[in-house]
Length: 206
Image 1 (cartoon, rainbow, N blue to C red):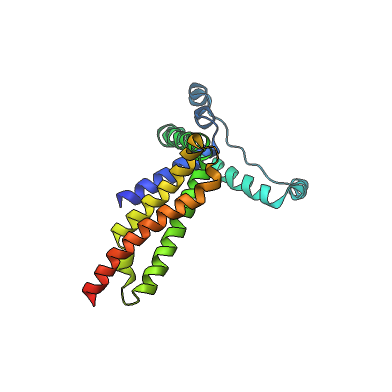
Image 2 (cartoon, one colour; image 1 turned 30 degrees about the horizontal axis):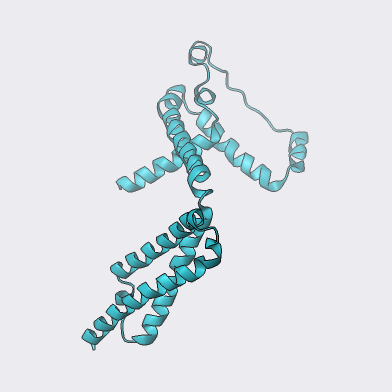
């Protein structure tokens, strides 16, 4: 139950953080609003206004409409609720969005090639290992083939493939030429060791 509540809170924080540009937009001038509260104004859409809205692109209208509805609903809350609930949610959402942008800009984008290389390396080695193991030991269940230990080894191999592509060019200028052969040779060596251990497990089951 606590995890669900935390997930809902984080989601709400991100939504509020993306809807409002700052806390002043949520609370406004507190003293002025307390002394001179804004009157309630009902806006009635005329036919001309409805016709003018048709000129906007459907996707843009839908996105702005959803954001405007969320913003209007939150601004419709009492001032104390906006100060006590919406503003802290905005602060948390702003922090999450800022950290996410920082992570993408400084970590993911510079090493995107290495991350993709690691994912591809993991997928290739895992597929090769599973197909070969099932071909050699058809009676061995997938649960034993893809045990936690074997999965951890394959994940580590994938990470090493990514690290090799990130570090290799710094020390060897022609790394891109030989990287596939080096990673494949190292991966096959480890896979063969894993298959040898599976052979023992298959013999024990037999």
